[in-house]
Image 1 (cartoon, rainbow, N blue to C red):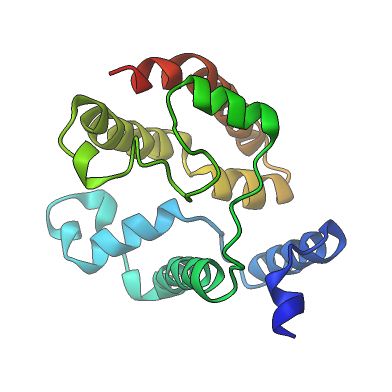
Image 2: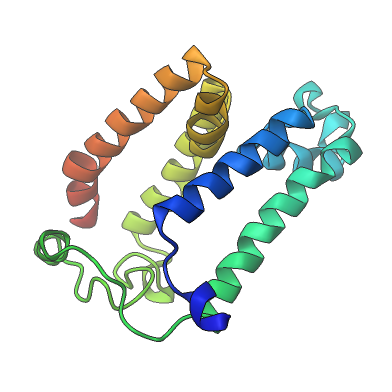
Length: 188
């Protein structure tokens, strides 16, 4: 059983499972999304006293916090208990591109040490990635009315036109970041 669970699941298993979860979410009138859990967490801490956006009944949204906790728990179990210790499988062209950008050992670690390490924490590059990137993600998520998971998985399964527009924008932004901004930021 552990051997079966630890292998990559084929599309004909994972895809219908996602459809089943979306069906359950729609059936119970819930909206799947990670960014809305941030609003719930802020409401839990009393931010609603100061900012009307966070003035909500957070107890009704506790399932959202549990969903995010499940993501962390699943990631921990997958990365530590079900991992075979082999390097990540990365396409050869991606390995070459990352090496040319200065990532020394792409595919060996989950995150590159050139970006995510204690030595890089107080550099200009990390300041841009953490502060500017965090602000843009938070602002963009609110401006778009949700994040990639909310729009791409839940919104598209609801046939929402705003989600289709948002997903197209996410892909355009991702391409611009990957091919133009990311190589520039790695030079900082």
